[in-house]
Figure 1 (cartoon, helix red, strand yellow):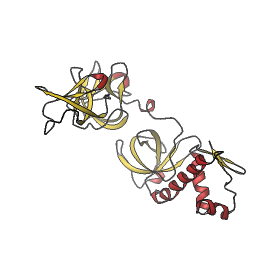
Figure 2: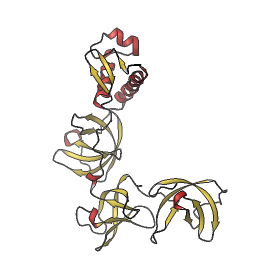
Figure 3: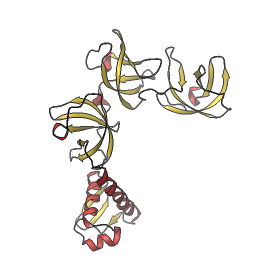
Figure 4: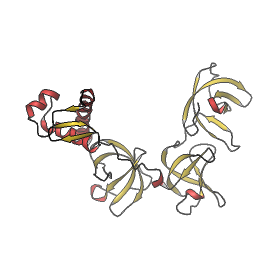
Length: 280
């Protein structure tokens, strides 16, 4: 089945004057217009395409890659304005992306840039953009680990620093005090998780963290696997256990063990008890 707003691997069916036809499952035959392929595929051969609706509301395919797909955040430019329905954004395809009036937070002019969320509108089955970012940021408790490398997209400035989308899912904060210079809205950055607070808010940093993460993350995975394999889903080890017992079980120091179970506890994957740890 073809998914609108996503890249799909679709089987080739046949060729006709308009182009190539692909098997879209419940969507029927999907046209890949023109001569976008160098050679005619074999029947049944999978073709990598992006699926969307064209200006005539037909479901079509393209080998071109948009700047963002459904479910992603992006920094896009306003290509044109229609006062009746909204603005159109340049997203790298021939047909511009609609940002409806109802999904705008401020009036926009041609040439303006803004961070938006690309989504499939369930009412129209069309791909649209939304600048109401809070609606689309995940508010579920994050499972990031301190020091974990992440992809960031700066979307606003606050009194404390810059708000950024983290890995296309959550909101995080880069503090002014932790930066060597100003950032710009729309700037994409490689960063790290500095901390996940008890209230679920994420502190970010651009400085280091990778080495510590690479050491602790595999150990946390090992401990989690041991808990899942244990008949009672529990281990008689905790942050107060003798170092020799911890080393005998996991061949690591007590300090590393405490850091790893701390990460798992903050991610709400384990419960720390007075005499051991167990799966949450």
